[in-house]
Each structure stands twice: as structure tokens, then as C-alpha cells.
Image (cartoon, protein in one colour):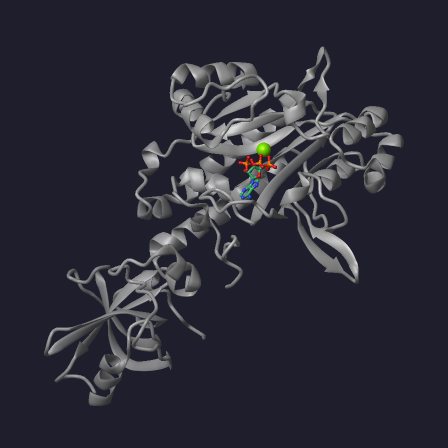
Length: 435
Ligand code: ATP
Ligand code: MG
């Protein structure tokens, strides 16, 4: 594929070879246009029936939409063409002919339901507005990695096949590991903590988490991507600061580098809201008072309740920006979260919320061996099973804090998408295991 020019890069007066998909065929009688599409954009190819080689015209008009072709010829300026240029072909090669019946229409003229789109992601991602979501997702992850570097973190990769779960037994996917029971990891929690106690001190991981969620919802996946942070010699305030910086970096990079993609998705880059300043930090108690005051819930929340989806929504509408909920009751948060110094009924656990939903959970970790083991027992977990983890707390574990952020939720809320599946190439949910 030498000397291939992208459709968006052709210039008048040159001879070029372009290659891509047949987006559209417009036959106007004596003249016909093939619209070729590649990753950069589109280009009009002009076919003049009486003036051009018959075979060439036949080839050009004989292809079906979405076939892959390569075209060589002269590029001319043409103000009436969609991009201001057209190519007058000398040769047309059909590299890969497409069936006339397509399972979905990449030109977007015919809408397809999400399941059809997910079954045919290759065709779906030929639509510029769908492709744009994944270009933005990639930019988000790039910016997040860069920001972690600025925070002095080292990227780690931890096992996804594990012997024990950490975030509640019912959400575990069991697998068979050489005849033994094992699980798909729900979170890199314990491993990243072990690394905060290592010589690395500050770490991050971007990787899959697996959760056998009970229900299909628009914001849960059974395989999600978690952005995880863990830092030694940090408390929950430091961890919240880092979460804010990561979110700001992601939004900032998208605003700066994805103007075209934002435009395709209906955002004006000028008022694409890059969050500024410190996000409000409400205590759990303030949060439930505030939710109750909205009058939007059928039943008032009482201290100790988890926030339902409805409660999250009512509070989000009321606050209207990113915000944190801090000082959760200890029993709502996992065993590895440290209690507050002055009140052990309250934890250092926090959630970062987008007005629409939870994005992050984090906190300061319990680094004292005795307290940690007691926490396991209180949560009905057998500390013996976690010996590989707890024993490292006997050999010098610094105070540390961190969080996990759902990458798909970050992108979903950033782009105001209704369904989290829009942000995943091949989502896994209760019904969907392939492709
Ligand atoms: P929720 O209450 O919204 O189900 P959670 O509190 O169970 O989430 P955590 O264990 O706190 O989730 O995980 C940290 C973050 O990982 C969440 O805030 C969310 O952004 C993301 N996350 C967790 N589970 C899922 C999932 N099933 N699908 C997509 N993202 C998820
Ligand atoms: Mg959570």
C-alpha cells in the first residue's frame, strides 16, 4: 500500500492514489460520483460515462457500497464537491467487494438499534460520530496516563485471575484454574495497596475489572475498565486532589485535541465544560440532608442508607457539578478503608460524583495490621485467605490512600451518552458474550 494519500490530504494539481470504502454512489446519468471514505474523511471521485474508459466506468459503477477500493488519478479543485476537491480516476481497483445487503448502514441514513450496532461494530465504527467516541476515549486514557506521570506514579499491571474477591462475593465470576476454583478480579485493590508499600510508593493501573452485576443497567458492565490510583504517605484528602486532577486533565485534553470529534457529537468546544476549581466536598450526612430537602424521593433517607440511583440523581441535579461525598458510615465501606481518627463510626471513604452518577470510590487505607485483620472479620471475610496481603502489613506498610475510577463512566458522562455500552467496543453484559 505504498503512496496512499488520505482523502483529507489530497491537493489540486497532483496525481494521487486514495484507498477506502465506497460511501455512496450517485449516478446522475451522463456523470456519476463515487464518494470514497477513509479514516480521514471523504473524497468525490468523478466518472464521466462518455469520456472515460468504458471498463473503468463499469468498474466504478459496478461496486456496491462499503466495498474497499483503491483509486488513482488527478486531483482537481471542485467547489461543488463536498470537500472542494475531486479525483478524476485513471484506474479503479476493487480490493474487497462488499455484499449488497449490509446489516447496518454506515452512512447513517438508516438508524440501527444498539444490539445490531454492537453485533456489527466494524461497520458501526465507520460512522464518524461513533468513531469519534472511541477517539475521545483514547485521548482520555492518554491524558490520564500523562497526568499520572506528572503525579510521579508508575504504571503497574496486576493479575486478573485471582484466588479471592474483595468487593463482595455475589459479584464474582468463578472460573476453573487447573482444577481449583479461582475468580476474575473485581478490582486491583489489594495488589495496588501492596505496591504502595513497595519501593514504587505511587502507582496507577488502567485495566479490566470483572463484576457479575445482578442487573443489566445503562451504567454497569460486566467487564469494565478501571483507572486505579494508590499512593504511599497520602491521606484521603490527597487522594481526592489527585482524582480531581485526573478528571480535569481528561476534560482538558479532550477540549484541546478533539474539537472535530466533539463537533461530530454535537458539542461546541467553547462551552465543553472543563471542570475548574475544587469540587465541592459534602459529608455523607450533608448529602443525605440535601437529598431529603429536594423532596424528590418517595422515602426519606436515614443515616446509614446507601444512596440509591434516584438519590444520586436528585443530589446531582441539586449540586450541578462534580462533587465528593466524604465521611461515609464505616459499615457501608469495605474493610480496607480506614476509620476516622476521632470517630470510628465514620470512615475516610469518599465517592466522587458526576451529577449523573458515581465515578470514583476511594479513601485512606487501613495500614495497621491488627486493625486490618479485625476489619476482615467484621466483614465476614476469612483473613487467612488474604494472608498474602495482610502479612505484608507486618513488614513496614506506610499510610496510603487511593481510588478507582470507571473509565467508561468518565467517557459516558463527559459525552452525555445514555448508555455505557456506547463507550465500549465489545461490551459484556448479561446477554452479550460475543462479539
Ligand atoms: P455502583 O454503586 O455505581 O454500582 P460501585 O460502588 O459498586 O459502583 P466501586 O466498587 O466503588 O463501584 O468501583 C469504583 C468505580 O468503578 C465506580 O465508581 C465506577 O465508576 C466503576 N465501576 C464499578 N463497577 C462498574 C461496572 N459494573 N460497570 C462500569 N463501571 C463500574
Ligand atoms: Mg463505589
